[in-house]
Image 1 (spheres, helix red, strand yellow):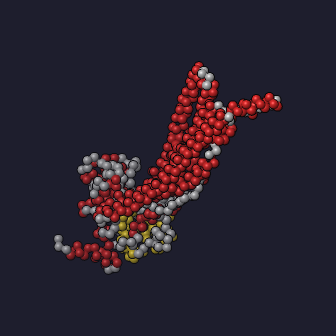
Image 2 (cartoon, helix red, strand yellow; image 1 turned 180 degrees about the horizontal axis):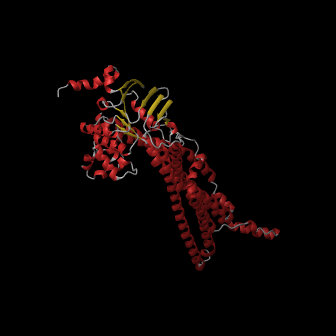
Image 3 (cartoon, rainbow, N blue to C red; image 1 turned 30 degrees about the vertical axis):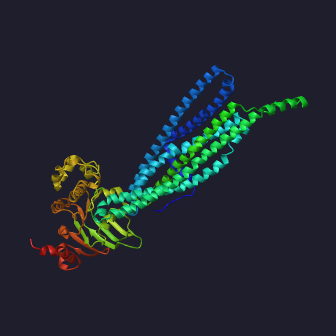
Length: 612
């Protein structure tokens, strides 16, 4: 899987795209910024009050003043806790609201893709993008950008307050380690970005592998591939571990660097403050001598550094380095969110969709289908359908047969505009289907596929697909087609949960439900793609009887390998290598003794000659 690394710690263009999703929640967004201002002010007030209490009350033994200021400090701490709560709740509320909207947009976008996109993209990758990657984006707001902004603002306010209230030399000494810390942080940003690109890549590969092999577990077990696939899984899992360890390595280095810088800063403050206190008496002696000898008053040049001031500076240093210590985790979270958003927006920026430029709404459809000189292939330069032309008359059954790979099923994908043709036209009632709205076109089509997909839901919902179809209509259709008997034997009948992909039902039962689903939608054109393959004889007989009923008055296109199922077709197209090589009715084609006759003989000769 390709890896995309922007090479920048912060992609401002990407960040701007993310912030657009905060627009509907601007009140919460801007409110969070206001709360960071309040938090910064409250946090900065605390050390200044402590310095004042030490120098004015504790040193002088003023217990009344000490008590009063402790009450004020307590109130400030309660206010700070309350504002902190509002900020945390607001930031998380904002993050969850944004990913809700983003996830809906992503899923809506995925629904519009061509089938070709899903042919080329592992399902596990899309699941990772829609679930875990988007979940990580929430932390950009809950623990990332808002918190980092708040921390940086707090640092700015505190540094300004330190210079304003305290000896500038002591402040400069306490901040002397900042340049080293800045370069260490920049290096960490760059390294952790690359590391988390690798982590997200390996997560996607792991999800894709697990999803694919669980879905294909029967193949793995039938061909005795458990050990081989386990070894492949171990390799992918090991790469995932290595990617995580690399990110942990950078994180483990950065945090001790912050701790060392903090300790050095505090040590320098204590050292310098101690020197100043030790030399204070000598400075006073020098001041007296200067005044006596030269009548110079140098008291303004000598500034006493108090115990309260040193204590306040140490508290400020701890408060400054606390967000810097957490910065490693903040960048960890932010980089994960940025990497995940880059992957999500890569899908959102993908334009691999059918262009729905049609404006026509089909009201009544007779069902005349015509292919005019249609050419198409799934890969550039490798056409599957070559200059194909044919017509299906309204209300008639058209059967299409041919060997595997002849292009039969491709016609279904083209008729539903799941893929765009390279050249030619496909007409429905004389109208080019590209001029018809996709929703209107597909509303008049119903398809029964051999590989039936059922959702993990009730039988009723799998039949109606949550359309406005009453229970009475469903039961009447089931009775008409002849599938009500098996449904009514199930524990909850129409409310029976078929589980994932309908695994609780047999192949034949799933096929019958798919047939019923197509029928209740009342289509103008019914398409049966090998619908009677891979099912038991009883189910096949049920479907054959139902076909005779529901195809009356509808255009029906039947694609099947079992030629016995299409003997009654009004027209049969015989395809080979993307072209129609024969057409006619069943008996006419047999009489010709051509390609169709050979296919028929291969299928039925052994059965016809076998004893009863």
